[in-house]
Image (cartoon, rainbow, N blue to C red):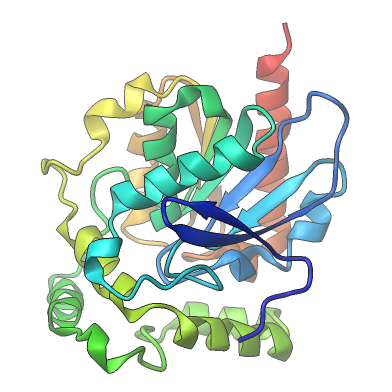
Length: 288
């Protein structure tokens, strides 16, 4: 794996986070920060950054253990709250004021933690294909299979070739992205820290509706403009999305027809339109 020439690093909480920025906007336009999900990286947004950065500054980062950022090599070095602390420190360093903050999947869990701890850092929020209470799949058989796999996963053996169970989204992604993008995606995945997979996988599988990690009760205290984006076929997250949006103090919902868990890859035009609509709505909310 080799990171791009434009990538930069920032030291936070004992690790180096790799990040990049592109574009600029009129004075007062918040930076848009994109936070990837479990086993992902900033590369997940690479095909859309140019378009989003046409009229604003856009920042992407690799969370610890992911992409090109530091691989800690221990399960003790990972946890959702650690990722939240990293993101807060990162935004303090590069945000240049409150930011428009997007979190995908696990990244959505991270950015909710950020806005709950430091609302002063966030101008608006996009919660993309994520949950505030449980990521567990609805099918009992699949749930048991995923739980058994993560529980038995031995990070000392290194990364597997894939964690994908296969499915129609894989075909949609293959039909949309370039072979070069996919090759880098595969290399980044196999190069990530297996200890992050173990620790964060266990944390996400432990999320339950009434458990101590549930953020359901905290959602009304998130007062910034927030758009929940979900792929129409991304179950169970799209099933949770209406309740998630309704529980927020200033939330709304956008469902992308035909999409699964990564609409920025399979339905880029619709995803980008949803993000840009959110940014326009949030900007109008911010005007006196």
